[in-house]
Figure 1 (spheres, rainbow, N blue to C red):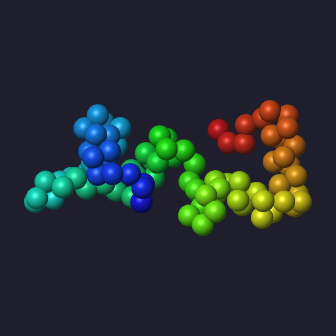
Figure 2: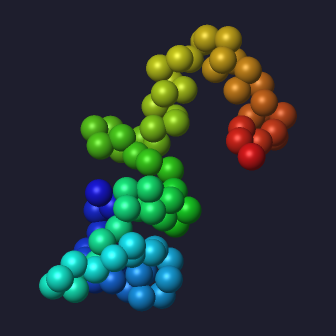
Amino acid sequence: MLGVSTKSIQRWADSGLIRAVARSVSQHRRFTRTEIERFRVAHLGEPRCPHCGRSLVSRRLAQIQGSPVATGLARKRKKGGKLAK
């Protein structure tokens, strides 16, 4: 899901960057999908398309290029405005 080693996950959990919700009987950490997504966006950046490697936002914007929505976003980006809070 994150494309990293188990040692990286252990290190991040031990340092408090990602929160395990429980441990299994064999002491394996358990994480919720929501927590993994929160961590991924906060620390690893925007999701990438598994096929082309581009950010999913950039890929979607390319698909709708020329539409009123894409034109408005491009205008806002050119003015230096933030796309999201």
